Amino acid sequence: MRRLPRAALLPLQLVLFVAAGTPGAPVSAPRSLVWGPGLRAGVVLPVRYFYLQAVSPEGHNLTRSPPGQTLFKVVIKSLSPKEIVRIHVPKPLDRNDGTFLMRYRMYETVNEGLKIEVLYGNEHVAQSPYILKGPVYHEYCECPEDDAQAWQRTLSCPTEEPQIAKDFASFPSINLQQMLNEIPKRFGEERGAVVHYTILSNHVYRRPLGKYTDFKMFSDEILLSLARKVLLPDVEFYVNLGDWPLEHRKVNETPGPLPIISWCGSLDSRDIILPTYDITHSTLEALRGVTNDLLSIQGHTGPSWINKTEKAFFRGRDSREERLQLVQLSRENPQLLDAGITGYFFFQEKEKELGKAKLIGFFDFFKYKYQVNVDGTVAAYRYPYLMLGDSLVLKQDSPYYEHFYMALKPWKHYVPIKRNLSDLLEKVEWAKEHDEEAKKIAKEGQLTARDLLQPHRLYCYYYRVLEKYAERQTSKPEIRDGMELVSQPEDSSSVCRCHGRRPLREEL
Ligand SMILES: *[C@@H]1O[C@H](CO)[C@@H](O)[C@H](O)[C@H]1NC(C)=O
Ligand SMILES: *[C@@H]1O[C@H](CO)[C@@H](O)[C@H](O)[C@H]1NC(C)=O
Ligand SMILES: *[C@@H]1O[C@H](CO)[C@@H](O)[C@H](O)[C@H]1NC(C)=O
Image (cartoon, rainbow, N blue to C red; front, side, top):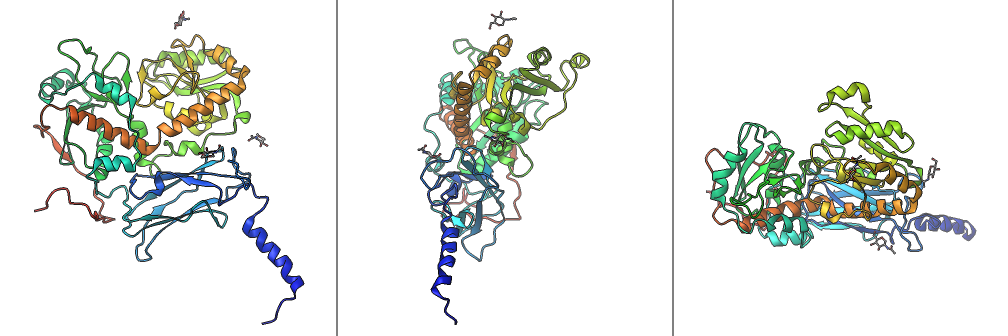
């Protein structure tokens, strides 16, 4: 082979050096940080996810996305060439603050393990490649961990959930017989939306107690999903699928309140709450049917703060009178507020006067700097998504709450507005005049919401509610007359075997 003259080698080396080290590039692949539950085999979720913080060659966290198309990408393969596995890996979600969300959905289980490569161009990022030693189960694999404490540790579940502690304070003990006698009579009438569940040996049984129980598909799907992941305690409970919390008896009354489980709580009721069906269902169906979920929203928060329109924004249905007032206020003060009703049902007579606004995609809400959160029939279930955006949330005072509200404080994470909206315009003006403070509250709210509303924490929350409830039962749960088994979905396309775990029942 002909030897190259030295002089010709030199520029070639330089070119190689430049390509490998990318000096002048805004990002250092090795110094960047990667972490999160999606890098642990044992954290089984419908969509697994982890985070990336871009870091500069000088070691500073980037606080904005590097310019241009992102060079970050994720490649996931089965560790063993013999195992073919279908995995959906969408593009990283750019959160526009120097961090990225990486997601993947497995359609099959791998026994050997997974290799996750996180790349910046062609360079490995942080400790990439990440090896997840198998088995790595997919969502529909029924391999419950029988040590629930170990499962919670694997998920890094918080040790305390203040809302759960508060909800159960009214119920030091739970009398299943009393509930069986009273609940069908009190809440099972024609208009009832209550479903009676028993979980026994990790099998889910239920009977509807009213006519309006179609939403049981949402409670079914999360209970089955949980039961595939962890051995649930034997437990018998009642889920209210309607909008309003039900139990208005006071703790010191006789007879006392019953621990009904609902999606939404209120200051004048005693219901035990769970994450709403909305965020639960979108967590289960993320990267499949739904486009708007707790993760996807984080990559669609519109222009940067300085480029957002300096107005408060609202679109929604006519489910509460204050929403109509918003439209009126918006007409009188178009420079401060852009509000519209997109569908009439409760106040149809108002449509002529107030008009109907065009539907706009939720991601486009974040073109505006301030978001108005006004209750619907109960708490507005858009609130978690608004908090995950990077706009300032103006939240109507409300007796209604969801499972995570307790951790969010007025003036720290959002700006409160009076229930009758009398101070809304004033608050918008305040925000416009105090841009730095407004931006800081928006950021603080977003960071806290990102932490609280991680999909794996929903699983922690559900489990903890069932666990607390089970501890308080004074008798054994039973499969009652009229209950039927809710079976796990057929998953014939992808076999999975549970490794090193006892089968739940001795198969005969
Ligand atoms: C850099 O980002 C990581 C992850 O977001 C964070 O834990 C760390 O504290 C940040 N470092 C500095 C100096 O802000
Ligand atoms: C704001 O928008 C302008 C014009 O589109 C763009 O050049 C600029 O980079 C944006 N600023 C930020 C911080 O995104
Ligand atoms: C709005 O509610 C406040 C109490 O929060 C009350 O003081 C005020 O008078 C009400 N304003 C209107 C216009 O009803």
